[in-house]
Image (cartoon, rainbow, N blue to C red; front, side):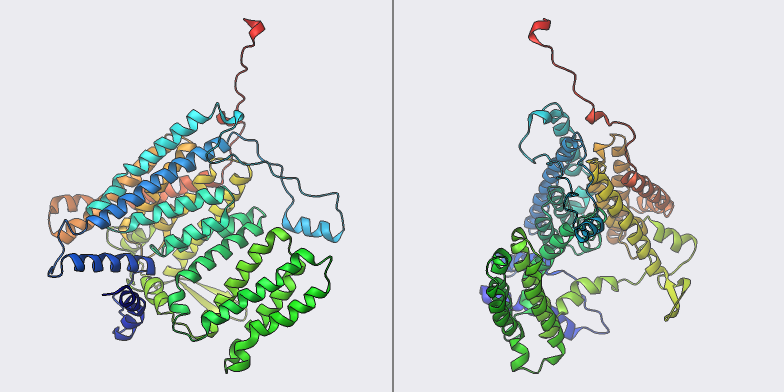
Length: 550
């Protein structure tokens, strides 16, 4: 098989599965990145062992090494993340900047004297300054402790090597995204997060915190940069399905990029070359609207006209440093227009991301310890049973099933953690890390249709709590042990062995769910609570003795 044949079959897999599915049972639910990795692995093994009919322990070594490498990256990301925030916690918080609404009102009043103060520079990731010297050994020690908690986590080892799953692959991408966002590299964080979502789709649920956190902090530009970087990465990664089957799609995307490039110089010369805007207007509009002049796709004409209007209007309000983001946003707009109006295939989305939400239509799995298991086991609730009914104007009575109620409860905790992250980030408080990781715990504790092994994500990331207290590591250890017991229960059922151990584990269910909910409430409180007084890390260092005092 050649590379061309392999890629053609890989792209056609989703659509072929969708056409041959019976009663909506697609069987395949791998996201594009996970499918690509497995397809390459199977191709490699078939080339080496063409007559093999079953798996052997030696066969899956490459996949186990892949998990090991990602675990090592997660441990390194944890080290640098904790080290960075311990050092940053010693810095005084920057002066409070006026909100976006206040800045806009100040411009309307032409009050140029009330410019927002410049924020204090954040510490570097690798380079140390003189004021960071006293805290550097403590930061490195705490970072090493947190990294070892990830590397030696029993849940991570069991999930990645004993019950070979792909759950651990999510952890390094999220930790790296938090680290990059802490450095104010939101576009790079979006790229890393979207690449991780191509391997593990659950990243998209909690990844929304990277949008809400800067919005709550009054930094909409950071949220826009994250959205642009994420949509650009996701569009390029799925271009084989959105663009390849459609004639003229790549040509149209190129014309949109050229149009944005022709308009961009106006950002730099609008005070000197008034005639250039008219020239750009005459060129940009035909470049954006040409498919609708030569084809029957009139239903997308309004979207193309809106894109053309934004291309010629936004440069009037942008600064020169925002020019690259303008071109990237124009590229994203062209991708969205192609995906919606050029009839690209979305089978990859329906099978990989959509199918998982209705694959197992049950409130909980038997060995999942969370609120959903308590409601199902003790109170006999079902997934689509109505919890209450909302009476809304123009919509009338809207029933809210248990599935929507639990998911909205998780969304509420996500927004609360985003608000807490904005609050802690503004104060340079290391509790910011707890606010960014806690949604993975509430996602498991409150979310419906949870697999038992999903608690490993919270257990692998909660060592960041070492920035607050070593005692919180015992809660993380409890969650790690509970994760192992739930995964072992499934392994015992699958292998039909060790029935006594299985009965012991099942005897703790669903009571262990109350402990998980309590842990979620503790970390949720730490996410939004602020430190009273002066933290120990911010206490001034003792003065050095002078030579004349000796």
